[in-house]
Length: 408
Image (cartoon, rainbow, N blue to C red):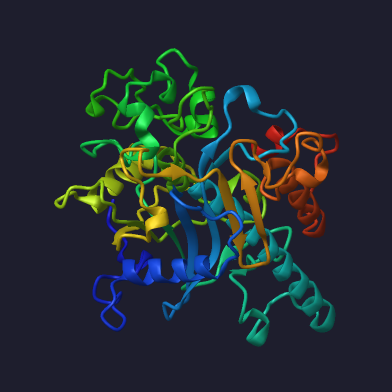
């Protein structure tokens, strides 16, 4: 596959006042994070992980549109059948769900402007000031027919303060703190040989076959495996962040429900912060490329349009502030239990990662609707159904389940 240099800034164009692209990205993200209230941020010796999605305009002006923090996820025994909690509160996943909420808001704005323009002029073709602040544009056939796409020249970028858990971290001499269970040979953090592929990888399993082996303490044996999130105690069913990002490089970041409206939205670049845990000669960018791109290349000839194997550029960012620096020993640092979720369109919530509900939820009121995060499946489904009605997308004659909607 030929490398598409237009998908992100080249090394010669990513300099601004002497700053590299990685420095520009991290500076933008940290600036937004610092402006957020103290609620949900690490306190004392606590640390967390920070992730964010940014857009760049044709002139490469950067803007943070979604942000998340966190390192926790829900164990198998605490999962809810009602979709009213957030199962995976790792920073990358929280930021991506905040991005999805942002996408819904952008699409709603686009459809509102389009309908108003059509009523006034009889045409759905937007031009001039109508599209100045819009991330998306209508397909050629208008709403309900052609799918919405990102405007020409606009790109989407991902920043993470450290290597994602899973495959991107297993080549370190000692795995990152979020892979500590794997380092200690905890088989429950990896997918077992006898698990069904559907349980292991969800919809991703339909796109290709992956070798799933067992652990024996040797990191070379788990490279390329689909892994669960690391952790102790109650086993989680959440797939590692490396696996999820690799999936985004095939299916897009928008998810199944937003695909009713959007063409796949792919990342143009992925930027990761440096760490004290990396050796001085550690090839950070090469490691990301192996775990997040190279391993899905075998799918290249198995995909139907409009899906593709996306090739983002990989960048290294400076070491983040201390509250995002994870040491290999818990003697000096503790992981923060809260996840901040924020986006440009007004979302700002704090979720307790060990319960998947909003911060401040009491035991007595744990099942009340007011404790449900905006990022849980139930709330995202509600937004989808409202937008589907507004977009006049044909609905099934009978009631369908959330899973059936996702499967199309």
